[in-house]
Image 1 (cartoon, helix red, strand yellow):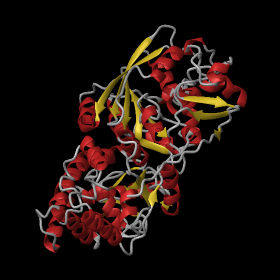
Image 2 (tube, rainbow, N blue to C red):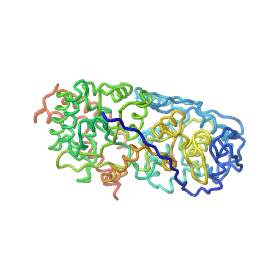
Image 3 (tube, rainbow, N blue to C red):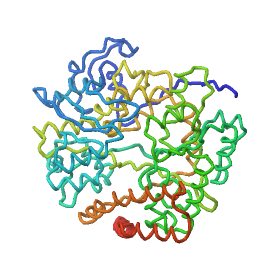
Image 4 (cartoon, one colour):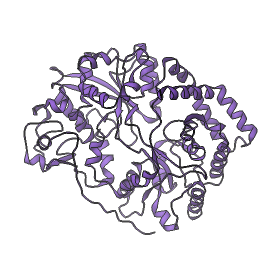
Length: 550
């Protein structure tokens, strides 16, 4: 195999968003946030940065919030989903610095990915949520907020206590739509992501593809041929490893292949060509999808334990060569490459992104992530102590100063500013995001806005730079924004969880050969799914879609 040497280039990008050069040069002397002093050592990456509490606040960078928010230290609990690659810590430097700045101390109560959903639903059902409740969907906030679980933020926004969030809402009016409950209250605040952002990518072992002379696949037939060649060369490997078996949602085996074979975004999803929601199992091409996946399973081209894998097992198989291809969050390309080099500096391991592909006759596409992303929202407990302080700290996380912490980290430690330009100090592009996340920077449900800051400060690895270029011809606008009424939210709550579980189980039985793939079995599958609410939900989503277009 030919050894690939990583080549890195240093570059900086100019700050945007109305922050002046003087303010940003001053920012070099602090642990993040605004300042009126300067320090050559801080600009040069030294250790003479003054404590955050010693820095005068700039109201232009806090949105007018007066710091500290509390004269006496106050502590709040914060529920959050814990990433497999970065443990949550209440002692993260950015939160120590923010505590010095604001007087607010955050104590995290993380839930690992494996038990996160169960923990979240238990806390909601028992009305025992933490003071700050992250990793929350807007739908759940709208459902449980009016029942007294979450604090109604609207009065505090109207009183001017949340100026930064109000500014984001004015810039992106969809935020009001997705966060307003049936009773008119606002019980959560969404993430404001980057415009034209792509979350996912196909990825494969580029070193193996080069060795075997494999070109990137343009359709599912070529993808099958690619896996066959890999299996022939590496008979102990199971080339394709799905991230999950989710049939509905943002990513997963059945959701992904439903799109690739039918053009429908998941088993119960949006059909761009028809401009309506449909149940993929009722599409004539659904049988082709099942037959294809069963073939991959039967021929050892897909991991036989695809339905059982935990995240640590997934990583082990991708890094060890037991698996060679997956569809995952695009950042995993550089993360896997970095881990492989850490384990063996001379490794040939090289994961590369691949462009979207689909079955013959289906146009491949990639949705961009919506800017207003309510699948990652934050709420406050209805009984949170001193709510005026709590809502202002929540607002601080959306401020210019707050988003410096959550996007950049600590000045002089994680980044530097020179001549009005911000640049991360990590010299190894593949290590940048993993190392920042270990310190709470770029962490889901903590970084809530101004995502463009991190993009402008990054030195992209060749793999990361290639992803957006590959995806560009295939990107389309995200699914139209829809909001459920109280009755619709209740229907989804009653139907969707059981339906999703049923779909996942039955689809896995088809793929593994436990259920024969024929007209009779598919008809029965559709009947059972409709009995569990598939038809009702499709009708409801189309009603919402029609309402959204009015």
